[in-house]
Amino acid sequence: MTDLSNIVKAYDVRGLVPDELDADIARALGAAFARFAGAPKIVTARDMRASGVELGTAFAEGVTSQGVDVVESGLGSTDLLYYAAGSMDLPGAMFTASHNPAKYNGIKLCLSGARPVGQESGLVQIREDAERFLEEGIPAAGKTGTVTQQDVLTDYASYMKGLVPDLVGIRPLKVVVDAGNGMGGHTVPTTFAGLPLDVTELYFELDGSFPNHEANPIDPENLRDLQAAVRAGGADLGLAFDGDADRCFVVDERGDIVSPSTLTALIAARELRREPGSTIIHNLITSRSVPEVVAELGGTPVRTRVGHSYIKAEMARTGAVFGGEHSGHFYFRDFWNADSGMLAALHVIGALGQQDGPLSSLLSSYERYVASGEINSTVTDQAAALAQIKQRYADKPQDELDGLTVDLGGGAWFNVRASNTEPLLRLNVEAKDEATMVGVRDEVLALIRGSLG
Image (cartoon, rainbow, N blue to C red):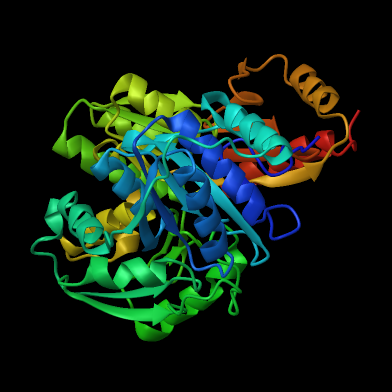
């Protein structure tokens, strides 16, 4: 029996090409998605990976076999696909493996209005149908759908800039952008056109082999070239995108990495000034500075589990205007509750360009704590380790919204949660100062790794 559970993940499809994901599987997934989505058309886009053309073509064959039309928007970022799905009110499929190495590819699926499709919202059914089609053949429909091409890059760029109105009248800025040979190299030039920006381009050549560094800006090692270029060129800021350009990381004029939590607080403040009293979503390992800033400005902070499906669900439920995650994902109500690295970048440019000071000064009021970053430990019995930690800190306030969060008082807290796919425990610690953070980090790590009784 065909089993696709190794490549159909919690939020998307992802695997090695062609060993785990090939044209036959893409074709079966296309047919299964067409039947699940129940729409007359499906829009697609792909990143720069060489295998994307074959996989996209096969997927379209599966879709059209069910009498459903395909609109191919060609090369694009994941948020460009969300724009297409939202503006056309169609289900969508994005062919990308995001920041994964070159030998991988994958498919991110959404319903009309860019609504996410995950394990809890249809991926299981799509996987089971695709497995059956691979065993028994894809059932034919009464007609075959058509495939047409529609370039949406110019419309996408205009829409994005229209969501950040204070880009009009910004002062000239020097910006370094590291696209990591990913889709930022395709979308940034068109989106930044017409803005008073002196852009230094790093690795804008689309190359799915990632010859310069991994397109994964959450790893500080992959930001070194950007940091050096900002310092050498006296730039006002630096921007780094991941492979499919749905995440954005920022460095300030000193070349220092800006925490995504700090960006979440900045953008939240901007959205609250535009719509006072709004709701802002943040996940539970985002800095405590975010809910503090939101509350101080009269907004309502709502805390969620880690993961884009939870963020998007809460945004839909609460009508939140904005949501942010520690991982560099930023979600916008006016972008169909979807995440966009480009919109986050434009917000930073708008905020910086409307005042005269450097980015570090602009962000200083949002940087209130010291964080450990996420630390992974291999643990065979995750439940037993979590139980030990829970008992050790039984006298402290705790919650189990996602893993275990312990409030140590005085601004210090930590969260430990298990990976869904690997034998790992993930630790995040935050405190008012470096010494406290390090002390808590080392104590909890010792418990996790078995050094304390």
